Image (cartoon, rainbow, N blue to C red):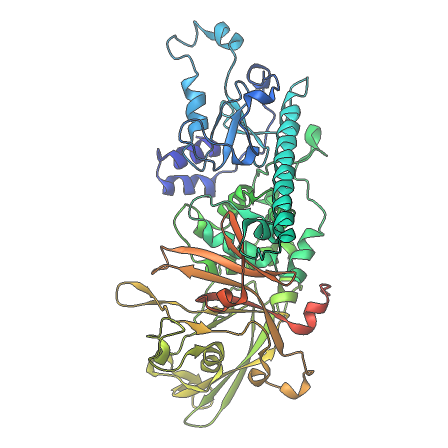
Length: 558
């Protein structure tokens, strides 16, 4: 069974995911190929009257009326939903096949009969053949595939321009009448017209929230957007634009390239939502923990993503690294002593900091110091605040981000299960532990530990934690604060990831992010304006703070 057949079968529920994962892990896949069926399948006459009205990326499936992932048949121009929805595009192909006669008898007939096997994704304009069971990159002799692609792009651009013109007129008429239109559709469009959402491919809100947050950290995002495109193909298809990246073995899979393409698709205003299916495919390929369509932990995904981006930028494509999430929020994978040893990358230059871990033996007083790199800090919510669920509850003081930071850096006596092996006493002894921040990163990522294990379940700590939107002062947590400049310890909020729901395996992730001085709420494919009060009331799960002096420049020295 080919990888593509397995993927389609997995999506339609015909094979179990574990079997698909085994195929994915153990078998190389085929690159996007040249299809021999185009001449019998692509026989359309471009007639706009045969298309639905509106933008192609929002067309509805002719069966279930879903407007998610519309695919158009290049034989009859009928529109159906694609792989990640209800799979009616594939069913359309299957229904049009003549199954009433034997293959040998009808071989000549089948060759002459128009097929409905080739369709095009109306959002990404990639072309897929169900007979090849793969994405294809070639065209007919008459260039019909490219003509359809250009026609769909023209319809998309026309619909977008018409929508912009209509809403601009609404805004002008509202302004002329002296009305405040801050909450109107027109005002929201003017402020959010460049924002692009990310389509949910099946419980992928955890990935979308992280991607939107990272896309609004300018010194990180700009680096990837300015990278040259990586062409993974050669031969006849070299130099042509890639509409969908497939791999032929791990060495041709580029997480950096798909991450770059996704970031470039955001904030362009050319479409309301982008489908990150190519990036999701690479995630499945190189991060086995995230295969499937179950809900995942956004923080865990972020850690894996940054780790693999770092390794690929270092050139360690073939290196296998097990990523360990330790309770203190340190990165403990063997290949990621990146802030001290190894080659620095944009990941460590932006997110990399260093902690000093001090352990003191309570019997002999021996002190042990250790330096640990980190890309983010995982902070406990102090137990005395865990019953306070909202900002307005009056049962005690509000938990603040500073409370969580103090809990992280305060002197702590280790319990009986964590006895320290004292080299002077030559046995395990009671001891104290304290963290100091030895080096602050340019972007400080703070993860609030909202999920914890009980005897049988992983429960959520739903406590509201108050956090500053501007001027988070980290000076008192530094090992040598006197060596820092007056503003080098101040941080301003850039993005917040929020988990809605009661458990880590359920619920929904969204993100708030600041872009050019305004806050936006990213809820998968929907992007809306948000005010600062709304952001401040959010129950943050992950907070991204940007160093104030670093905000003046997006240049990062590697």
